[in-house]
Length: 242
Image (cartoon, rainbow, N blue to C red; front, side):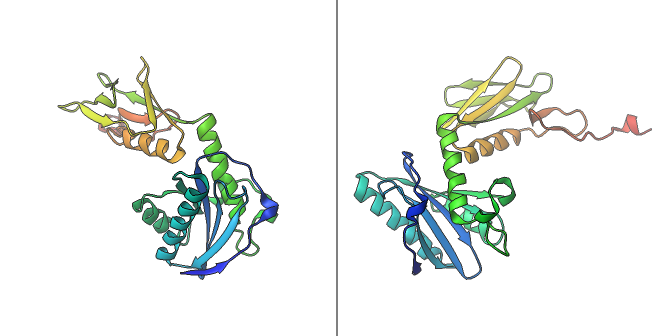
Protein backbone atom coordinates (compact mmCIF):
# COMPACT_ATOMS: atom_id res chain seq x y z
CA UNK A 1 0.00 0.00 0.00
CA UNK A 2 1.31 3.47 -0.84
CA UNK A 3 2.31 5.44 2.24
CA UNK A 4 3.29 8.82 0.90
CA UNK A 5 2.92 10.75 -2.34
CA UNK A 6 5.53 13.43 -3.01
CA UNK A 7 5.25 16.21 -5.56
CA UNK A 8 7.21 16.00 -8.81
CA UNK A 9 10.71 17.43 -8.61
CA UNK A 10 10.37 20.07 -11.31
CA UNK A 11 13.86 21.43 -10.65
CA UNK A 12 15.45 18.16 -11.74
CA UNK A 13 14.22 17.98 -15.32
CA UNK A 14 16.16 15.52 -17.48
CA UNK A 15 15.69 14.93 -21.16
CA UNK A 16 15.78 11.33 -22.32
CA UNK A 17 14.36 9.54 -25.34
CA UNK A 18 15.16 6.05 -24.09
CA UNK A 19 12.31 3.58 -24.29
CA UNK A 20 12.06 2.62 -20.62
CA UNK A 21 10.79 3.69 -17.20
CA UNK A 22 13.76 4.45 -14.94
CA UNK A 23 13.35 3.88 -11.21
CA UNK A 24 15.70 4.28 -8.24
CA UNK A 25 15.00 2.89 -4.78
CA UNK A 26 16.24 4.41 -1.52
CA UNK A 27 15.91 1.66 1.08
CA UNK A 28 15.58 2.35 4.79
CA UNK A 29 14.24 0.32 7.69
CA UNK A 30 10.88 2.14 7.62
CA UNK A 31 10.23 3.17 4.01
CA UNK A 32 11.30 2.53 0.43
CA UNK A 33 11.47 5.81 -1.51
CA UNK A 34 10.71 5.37 -5.23
CA UNK A 35 12.12 8.01 -7.61
CA UNK A 36 10.99 7.53 -11.21
CA UNK A 37 11.37 9.08 -14.65
CA UNK A 38 8.76 7.97 -17.19
CA UNK A 39 8.33 8.65 -20.92
CA UNK A 40 5.80 11.39 -21.63
CA UNK A 41 5.64 12.58 -18.01
CA UNK A 42 7.05 16.01 -18.73
CA UNK A 43 10.56 14.54 -18.41
CA UNK A 44 10.58 15.30 -14.69
CA UNK A 45 11.35 13.01 -11.79
CA UNK A 46 8.57 12.08 -9.36
CA UNK A 47 8.63 10.40 -5.97
CA UNK A 48 6.41 7.97 -4.13
CA UNK A 49 7.12 5.79 -1.11
CA UNK A 50 5.92 2.47 0.25
CA UNK A 51 6.46 0.83 3.61
CA UNK A 52 9.71 -1.11 3.89
CA UNK A 53 9.15 -4.74 2.95
CA UNK A 54 5.90 -4.01 1.10
CA UNK A 55 6.77 -5.93 -2.05
CA UNK A 56 3.15 -5.99 -3.23
CA UNK A 57 2.94 -2.21 -2.96
CA UNK A 58 6.20 -1.80 -4.87
CA UNK A 59 5.07 -4.07 -7.71
CA UNK A 60 1.72 -2.28 -7.76
CA UNK A 61 3.55 1.03 -8.20
CA UNK A 62 5.59 -0.38 -11.09
CA UNK A 63 2.39 -1.64 -12.72
CA UNK A 64 0.86 1.81 -12.29
CA UNK A 65 3.91 3.46 -13.89
CA UNK A 66 3.64 1.11 -16.86
CA UNK A 67 -0.09 1.80 -17.19
CA UNK A 68 0.36 5.59 -17.11
CA UNK A 69 3.25 5.48 -19.62
CA UNK A 70 1.18 3.29 -21.94
CA UNK A 71 -1.74 5.71 -21.69
CA UNK A 72 0.47 8.69 -22.57
CA UNK A 73 2.59 7.14 -25.31
CA UNK A 74 0.39 4.32 -26.64
CA UNK A 75 2.98 1.56 -26.17
CA UNK A 76 4.37 -0.67 -23.45
CA UNK A 77 7.61 0.19 -21.60
CA UNK A 78 9.91 -1.93 -19.47
CA UNK A 79 10.97 -0.89 -15.96
CA UNK A 80 14.68 -0.50 -15.07
CA UNK A 81 15.45 -0.36 -11.34
CA UNK A 82 18.61 0.62 -9.46
CA UNK A 83 19.36 0.42 -5.73
CA UNK A 84 22.36 0.44 -3.43
CA UNK A 85 23.99 -2.71 -2.13
CA UNK A 86 23.31 -3.48 1.52
CA UNK A 87 20.21 -3.62 3.72
CA UNK A 88 17.43 -5.00 1.46
CA UNK A 89 19.28 -4.45 -1.82
CA UNK A 90 20.23 -8.01 -2.73
CA UNK A 91 17.11 -9.97 -1.82
CA UNK A 92 15.00 -7.23 -3.41
CA UNK A 93 17.13 -7.53 -6.56
CA UNK A 94 16.40 -11.27 -6.75
CA UNK A 95 12.66 -10.80 -6.23
CA UNK A 96 12.48 -8.10 -8.90
CA UNK A 97 14.27 -10.32 -11.39
CA UNK A 98 11.90 -13.19 -10.60
CA UNK A 99 9.05 -10.83 -11.51
CA UNK A 100 10.63 -9.95 -14.87
CA UNK A 101 11.93 -6.52 -13.82
CA UNK A 102 15.48 -5.52 -14.79
CA UNK A 103 17.34 -4.65 -11.60
CA UNK A 104 20.81 -3.26 -10.88
CA UNK A 105 22.59 -3.24 -7.51
CA UNK A 106 25.43 -0.74 -7.20
CA UNK A 107 28.16 -0.01 -4.69
CA UNK A 108 27.72 3.66 -3.69
CA UNK A 109 31.49 4.10 -3.67
CA UNK A 110 31.54 3.37 -7.41
CA UNK A 111 29.44 6.46 -8.22
CA UNK A 112 31.23 9.81 -8.20
CA UNK A 113 28.87 12.39 -6.69
CA UNK A 114 29.19 15.60 -4.62
CA UNK A 115 28.53 15.53 -0.88
CA UNK A 116 25.19 17.31 -1.27
CA UNK A 117 23.91 14.29 -3.22
CA UNK A 118 24.47 12.04 -0.19
CA UNK A 119 22.20 11.66 2.81
CA UNK A 120 23.34 13.12 6.09
CA UNK A 121 24.51 10.60 8.72
CA UNK A 122 24.01 7.54 6.51
CA UNK A 123 26.18 8.81 3.61
CA UNK A 124 23.81 7.00 1.23
CA UNK A 125 23.13 8.30 -2.28
CA UNK A 126 19.83 10.07 -2.88
CA UNK A 127 17.34 8.85 -5.46
CA UNK A 128 18.27 11.42 -8.07
CA UNK A 129 21.97 10.47 -8.01
CA UNK A 130 21.06 6.79 -8.37
CA UNK A 131 18.68 7.55 -11.22
CA UNK A 132 21.29 9.61 -13.06
CA UNK A 133 23.76 6.73 -12.73
CA UNK A 134 21.19 4.35 -14.23
CA UNK A 135 20.50 6.78 -17.08
CA UNK A 136 24.21 7.20 -17.80
CA UNK A 137 24.59 3.42 -17.87
CA UNK A 138 21.68 3.09 -20.31
CA UNK A 139 22.96 5.90 -22.56
CA UNK A 140 26.41 4.29 -22.77
CA UNK A 141 24.82 0.93 -23.51
CA UNK A 142 22.79 2.35 -26.40
CA UNK A 143 25.54 4.56 -27.86
CA UNK A 144 28.78 2.64 -27.28
CA UNK A 145 27.77 -0.63 -25.64
CA UNK A 146 29.65 -2.68 -23.04
CA UNK A 147 32.24 -5.37 -23.64
CA UNK A 148 33.99 -8.14 -21.72
CA UNK A 149 36.95 -10.08 -23.08
CA UNK A 150 38.09 -13.58 -22.16
CA UNK A 151 40.98 -15.80 -23.26
CA UNK A 152 40.89 -19.53 -23.94
CA UNK A 153 44.14 -21.06 -22.69
CA UNK A 154 45.19 -24.63 -23.40
CA UNK A 155 46.43 -26.86 -26.24
CA UNK A 156 43.47 -27.99 -28.33
CA UNK A 157 41.08 -25.65 -26.54
CA UNK A 158 39.04 -23.57 -28.99
CA UNK A 159 35.63 -22.10 -29.69
CA UNK A 160 33.51 -21.32 -32.73
CA UNK A 161 30.36 -19.25 -33.20
CA UNK A 162 27.65 -21.11 -35.10
CA UNK A 163 24.53 -19.03 -35.71
CA UNK A 164 22.98 -18.52 -32.25
CA UNK A 165 25.29 -20.79 -30.26
CA UNK A 166 28.99 -21.06 -29.43
CA UNK A 167 30.61 -24.49 -29.61
CA UNK A 168 33.53 -24.98 -27.23
CA UNK A 169 36.21 -27.69 -27.22
CA UNK A 170 37.53 -27.56 -23.66
CA UNK A 171 39.19 -30.90 -23.09
CA UNK A 172 36.02 -32.79 -22.26
CA UNK A 173 34.89 -35.94 -24.09
CA UNK A 174 32.16 -33.88 -25.77
CA UNK A 175 31.77 -30.35 -27.18
CA UNK A 176 30.16 -27.74 -24.94
CA UNK A 177 27.29 -25.79 -26.52
CA UNK A 178 26.53 -22.31 -25.18
CA UNK A 179 23.37 -20.53 -26.37
CA UNK A 180 23.87 -16.82 -27.08
CA UNK A 181 21.23 -14.79 -25.16
CA UNK A 182 19.13 -12.19 -26.93
CA UNK A 183 20.80 -8.78 -27.05
CA UNK A 184 24.31 -10.25 -26.72
CA UNK A 185 26.97 -10.52 -29.42
CA UNK A 186 29.91 -12.93 -29.12
CA UNK A 187 32.99 -12.78 -31.35
CA UNK A 188 36.03 -15.08 -31.32
CA UNK A 189 39.27 -14.22 -33.11
CA UNK A 190 42.10 -16.46 -34.32
CA UNK A 191 43.96 -16.19 -31.00
CA UNK A 192 40.98 -17.67 -29.12
CA UNK A 193 40.07 -14.31 -27.58
CA UNK A 194 36.33 -14.08 -26.81
CA UNK A 195 34.60 -10.69 -26.93
CA UNK A 196 31.16 -10.43 -25.33
CA UNK A 197 29.29 -7.20 -26.13
CA UNK A 198 25.84 -5.73 -25.65
CA UNK A 199 23.84 -2.74 -24.46
CA UNK A 200 23.03 -4.21 -21.03
CA UNK A 201 26.02 -4.02 -18.71
CA UNK A 202 24.62 -6.56 -16.24
CA UNK A 203 23.80 -9.09 -18.97
CA UNK A 204 27.23 -8.72 -20.59
CA UNK A 205 28.92 -9.41 -17.27
CA UNK A 206 26.62 -12.34 -16.53
CA UNK A 207 27.25 -13.99 -19.91
CA UNK A 208 31.01 -13.52 -19.53
CA UNK A 209 30.88 -15.12 -16.08
CA UNK A 210 28.86 -18.06 -17.43
CA UNK A 211 31.36 -18.62 -20.25
CA UNK A 212 34.26 -18.54 -17.78
CA UNK A 213 32.41 -21.09 -15.67
CA UNK A 214 32.40 -23.60 -18.53
CA UNK A 215 36.07 -24.35 -17.78
CA UNK A 216 37.52 -22.37 -14.90
CA UNK A 217 41.29 -21.77 -15.09
CA UNK A 218 43.37 -24.62 -13.71
CA UNK A 219 45.29 -23.43 -10.61
CA UNK A 220 48.46 -25.29 -11.66
CA UNK A 221 48.87 -24.74 -15.41
CA UNK A 222 46.29 -22.00 -15.97
CA UNK A 223 44.39 -23.95 -18.63
CA UNK A 224 40.78 -22.97 -19.14
CA UNK A 225 38.84 -19.75 -19.76
CA UNK A 226 39.88 -16.57 -17.97
CA UNK A 227 39.18 -12.86 -18.22
CA UNK A 228 41.75 -11.10 -20.41
CA UNK A 229 43.17 -8.97 -17.58
CA UNK A 230 42.63 -11.56 -14.87
CA UNK A 231 45.68 -12.37 -12.73
CA UNK A 232 45.68 -16.00 -11.62
CA UNK A 233 47.26 -17.29 -8.46
CA UNK A 234 49.14 -20.40 -9.47
CA UNK A 235 49.65 -23.32 -7.08
CA UNK A 236 52.97 -25.09 -6.86
CA UNK A 237 52.89 -28.68 -8.12
CA UNK A 238 54.45 -31.66 -6.37
CA UNK A 239 57.70 -31.35 -8.32
CA UNK A 240 58.05 -27.67 -7.43
CA UNK A 241 57.47 -28.32 -3.74
CA UNK A 242 60.48 -30.61 -3.31
